Length: 345
Image (cartoon, rainbow, N blue to C red; front, side, top):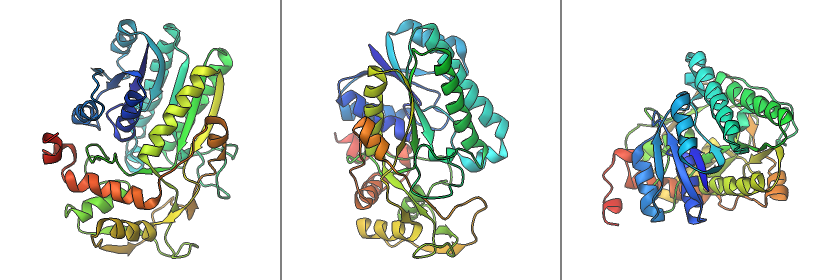
């Protein structure tokens, strides 16, 4: 039996595919490659020395999604596929609602048709909105401040209703904090389209000369250095969390949410300085005005995941920065780079 990974060519999806293959799972990847590269999956094959089926299919294409289930014996789904840029979601909200929510409804409808009830869903810490206190626990009030976050929150609610309607379902809602880092090989990593929305790929692109400087949004927050504090987690730790969640949903029923974070916050300037130390590169930055909607600090209480999944983040900020630089320095143009390292393997 196989694990279906939707969005498996993406940043977190590709790292999770490696972990699944190294743990001797059979996998099937479904991706429309709208914001990812088939090259990522070629490199997953190289790293794992394993082959697997890939379907170039959009979740909105009900007929072809159905065909994937018809052709394969699937026991569980890890669902990453979705649009994820906060700023873009504000500009084109209907596109985000249609893509993320309708795609998930189609997926779960077909899962139910074929008797596949095990689901690990890629949610987000954005479902906590602007938290009153930190660290954030799973039972805190939920809200969202942008359409992207609302799609995650609505999908969580839909999945909760699904379990109420049919107790065969076993669902893990994984609320990530801020994934950074890359596979230690430097073969796969974060490769955003256009100008990055997130801090670390912006820093790494400054380091390789693609961008001039990092904009630091605000220096007057009530934090030790005045810049915003976030919980950064190594993508390899995050991938491992998906395997732990998969084991859980395969062995029980119900629906549970889990924070996947380190439980420690780092400020923007701390991340920049940690990256400089890890890479030996000087990172130019300038302080600019705060962004609307940004909050002072946000970090997880991950004890539920440790208690119920047996999962805990292991990698520190130094490893996150080192591996991010290793990826970007070997692949200055992301997956468009003809990596000598890759070709020599």
